[in-house]
Image (cartoon, rainbow over all chains, first blue to last red):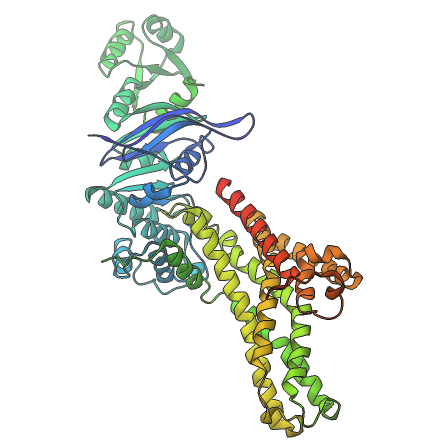
Length: 303
Length: 267
């Protein structure tokens, strides 16, 4: 699978000394949902703005569809639909009028409007002024605007931000159906659950640099490498003495040990070691390290 | 099948569509009818003062209304139109949406400017038709005005409006540049209104500086006999010296605005 977006050593600073992007590199495979994960202020939106030519990076190179982007000639944007943070919509116009406006700019036939409105489930509210739209409806309209020119690549910056659970589910379903129709989706989010549910590839950004990039499977493997088990025992000190040479142990509460595992096979070994010296075990619980913990781990260890 | 329209004309179509149900139409209507309504009320309140039998009343009537319109209404209307048109993008935070489209920034820039110029021309037309309509209305109420027996001298009026429009280009260019630069509605309006007040005093002082001060040029452009003649040089062309200065300043301000806009990062 070839890369549809390729960013190489991208750097950007808003003011002197305030480096937002620091030699960021990433590759987005064709047909993927690429989850671009990072805390607020990590540089996600700046990366997206650079890709769309809204800001000019100081260093580095961005290639989209195998072409280096040129901010003075935005022809490369023809095949890209985007939604950057809050959707850019005119609140004095209706949803339909907003879409018609984009059709006028891009010489798109009007029948496409109904198509995209259906796609984002907004057909019934199309004649309502957008100032009366809920946040979810505005996000869906923003998505409809992004879809209007039937792009091969969609760049979506936090599309579920500010939505209620139903809104999140709706947007998620739309994104999945878009990927199934062959589109590549670059999706930024600080919501790990979102990326976990949608993405096929992941990039994790911190302080403007990429700290992890790979498939969701590679991330899953990392996840299993960070297994933990919590064991409640009657004698905390004796347990620690027995296990300490072999395992890293933390005590989170009284008589509860939190032990880092290499694999799940470590669990019976620990139990055996403890029962051999007659330590009573009241509870054993596997702490599956979810993406969120992994994300926190990754961002902490790379500081 | 996609229709093939030049990006510039597509942008103009979109800009005009964007103004649908925007308050700028009320501004143009109000700005256009204000002076004719005031003059009509003044004529009707003392009709015998304003009756000149057997002389075409349209000449005096249009001279009076257009002098007041160009001196006191036109510049504020330009300031407001420019700010309204540009503020649609600031208010809705839609620059990122526009500049994410496969269209060069220059097309957005010049299409917006063209729409502003069209709206300014429209405000002159609204003024003209309002004045015309009210002239005939006065003839119905008080036939002694004799508006019904004559026609406006279009040969005088059309060049007058063309001169006014060209003289206003520097203000349009400057206000456009300011509206694009300042990301809020009020700042360009405050600067524009201050400029308008200063412009009035510069005009009264008959200073040569007025020839190059955009906010004074609309006063000077139609003042063919009083102050400008003492400052102006005869160019021997249809355009007078003030209009050449206005065209030059317009080019400078529009060029500067475009340069800033193309360099601007959308954060």
